[in-house]
Length: 202
Image 1 (cartoon, rainbow, N blue to C red):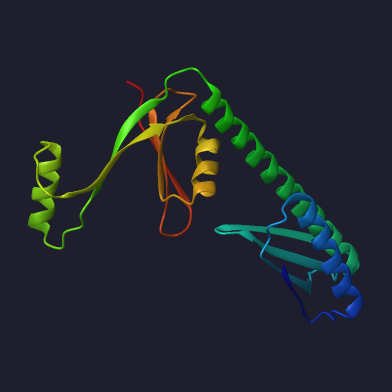
Image 2: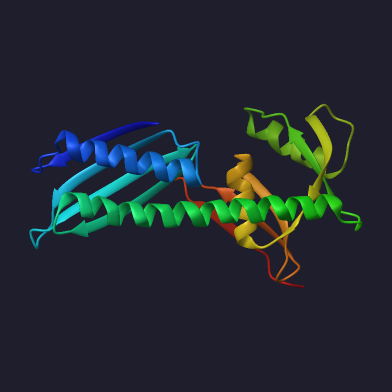
């Protein structure tokens, strides 16, 4: 893991940098051994305390931030590192819960709910797009369908659906909300946030 230590009007000597690198290495090894890089910045707050900001890239599209304040820089880092460890621990627990739920789904004797996933050719002309959409709706034998295969609709909580979206790096996921029983959709927005479509119950 690549670690960068910087200071804004704060001296970051070799002892502090070693403390930061050793501390982050221990945390990531214990909770998330796939971290890519970390940026640690020290600065002074308005009360003349030291503040530490940790920005960790723990994987593709997975960023975590933690902050800490203390009378000295070493302790400020330790406070921020404790917050980071707590978040990594929570994330790992969610990943483990998600993996268990997937295993339970595979082992379940219940017949999974299935749907049809269709990939359509992208047409530049709007008229062709409209015609393609109508053809698909009418199930006409036109050449607009690129691929078609069955897909399983899992019964998940919203949190589990977001977790699965992150783990599979999919742009969109349809699922049946385990709380309401209706079909929901979570998707990755262009701004990086996750959107959630919750259809009203019948």
